[in-house]
Length: 317
Ligand code: TXA
Ligand code: MG
Image (cartoon, rainbow, N blue to C red):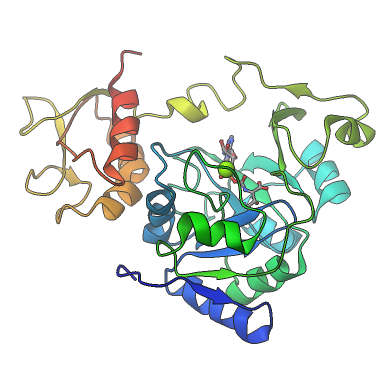
């Protein structure tokens, strides 16, 4: 699916939905409407499709994505839903609420979905087309807002085409979105709800179920497990960048012509490298690597986000 020419505009009937599902299952990127905004969908179990989302948006860094599923049964295949999270799910799903939940070990999602974290953000959207599409695909679909990085979120198919036309396979045109702002994101600390992003479900409405207005995440607040802040996930070992060969005692992570004990991509493919990045971070921890050397990665396309994450990993901790 590398050569893109025209982005298909699909009408919201059974044929259009079937085509959208077919393209997604073949690794394509398809924008679809939800009640909040249009999402840029890719199958969450497909490494390369998830990497291509960052490429298409031109995102300069890898932030974790929301997995969209049609129902609670599909949630239970990827995440643990209990306590307060379960209460909120009962009250607001389907709807404009995203819950950050412990990820199941056998969820099978690309590590890029959660940016290497052990949690996963999940949402059941309340939009009939999104529901039909998710059922037709039969797998979780990640979908950030379907706009180029730094631009405003699209609430009509026309906005999607204006920003991403020629960069994605298709857009399923379902007319304007009803909510128009992104979903509210709620995480949990010891079963206490914390608002990570304000959105379609207000804090006051959440309070109706929780009994009190939930806290908002502060600047330096740790919502994830220690050492697992979204912006800080990195391997345990000390990381040296721009290495062309390992020094004694270093585990070498290669790219392209620079080989290694592991390689991000032997062929120098940036989408493959992005897909392997967090997987290799985990592998390095599993092998107990305390000194890590990483080959140069070109600062272009997905390389920008890869290098952003590598530089964070190499920064003094
Ligand atoms: O309304 C929406 O939520 C739209 C529609 C398409 O569903 N999607 C959306 O996705 O806004 P996106 O990728 O723009 O926002 C996802 C947010 C990110 O800011 C990310 O930091 C947060 O969710 N997030 C995802 N996974 C997380 C995790 N495991 N822990 C903490 N935050 C997470
Ligand atoms: Mg966005």
